[in-house]
Image 1 (spheres, helix red, strand yellow):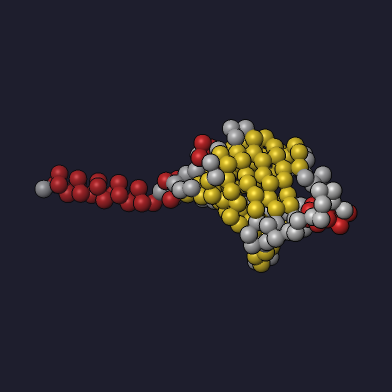
Image 2 (cartoon, rainbow, N blue to C red):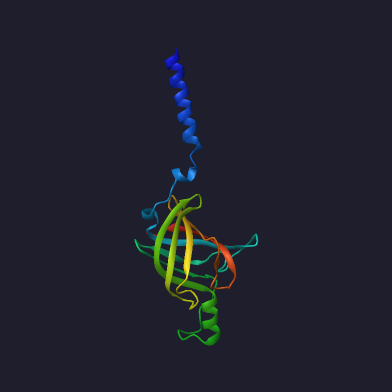
Length: 172
């Protein structure tokens, strides 16, 4: 009887310990999972509790992650086509304000409940203000979806510092 009680007590203890492990360690995102091409579904900026969409509610674009480099290109899908291939000054300004693109090598940091930390050092970008800066994202893969969260960056389209949440779906 004592052995049965000890076995039951041990089973309950193991079950409680397993349940107390944080769920993010059970669903940890790995570097291999983020590698690939991802199509943007949404891009939200969170500033002072307000949600805004710096590139509209249905942005277009992609993020590609290789073993050492990531790059992204996002545009406001509502922007009008220019009158011709040669943009006039107003069209060039509008194009710059409705898009963002950058690339850089990245490193992987710790895993947290927000995801796998990736820090990219921007070396080339559509905005001359971005090269030499770090872009930090917490990346979480669930099925065929990737969520990238930044703790706070200056949006090159608006100049506002926001926490960004980018939702993407696997494209390749």
